[in-house]
Length: 238
Image (cartoon, rainbow, N blue to C red; front, side, top):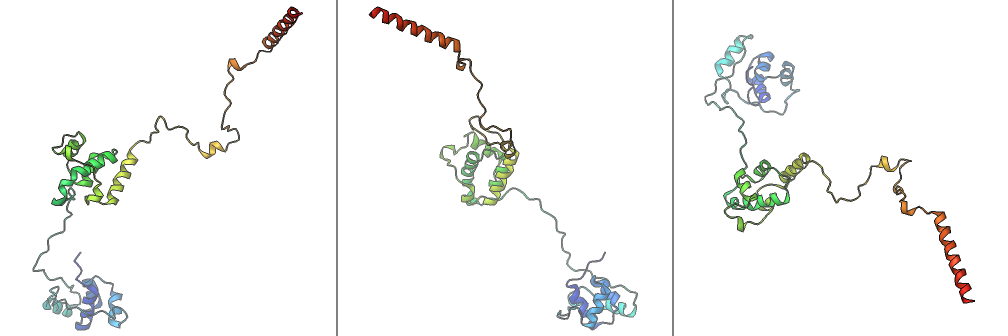
């Protein structure tokens, strides 16, 4: 498939106004529909577009136009470009570039990330700060050559990454991290379908202990013993 010319409608306008080419020839060269080219000739399409000369722009030659005008079956061919443009290739994105003036702040930023967000992986810290895995390990183990002078500093404040990038990596790490409840978390709210159930009891009765059971016979025996003792004391006083 041949390449379309630059500004195809403007080129079609010029060809309609300055040549006797057929609608099909112009439509095929400009990659337009023949009815659209007919609309240009009738003034219904591209009425406000100024025509562009394809000969001046180097897209067609005068000889090619003459051949097509003399032979209705001839198809216009794009002129060879004198300057060949290189093919656009997708460049693989490398590590984040850090300005020279900010590179001494990277260990401080790593220390802040390690302490504030321990869930972050080394690869995520490398993407945020633009550092190496060896440097991250040295900061973690306090074996960095400047470990005594390091102080945790927010990488966003230092300008090493944006807040959006930091939040994105933190959220990604939180998804990968299993949800665990601490041992001393206390009471946990139950779901609504449990608490609204008819048989649900918020405070179940504790089982009765053996010491809480009252022995009626022993109570009466003690009362009888106290009464006999009182009668004995009254006899002694008389």
